[in-house]
Amino acid sequence: MIANADAQLERAGDIVERLRDFLRHKEVRMQSLELDPLIERTIELIGWFASQRQVELRFTSGSAGLWLLGDPIQLEQVMVNLICNGVQAIDEAEMPEQRVTIATCSRRETFAL
Image (tube, rainbow, N blue to C red; front, side):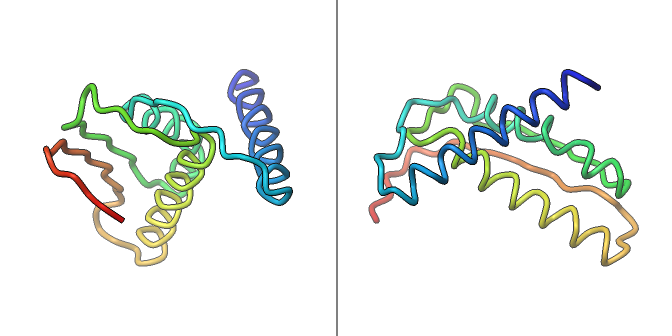
């Protein structure tokens, strides 16, 4: 429990630091990240949130070994927001199955923005 609280505090500090950098127009900290561990860490961080609402979080990986280039804190924050939104929607809708499933897949496609 204490280790989890410590991890939450450290993550909050990282988020505040990144927000300060963003507001000061500093460079985003891009690095190579493996997708599955990033998702697993995110689920660990918000497990208590889903548990309080009796919503199960399930992760199914179809992308083992898939790497991304991005800011780990920003990517994690996006996932936290999306998963928490899903948990809240399931909870408020009083669905018979209280579960949010996060699934990944790997395709050989190139996306251009």
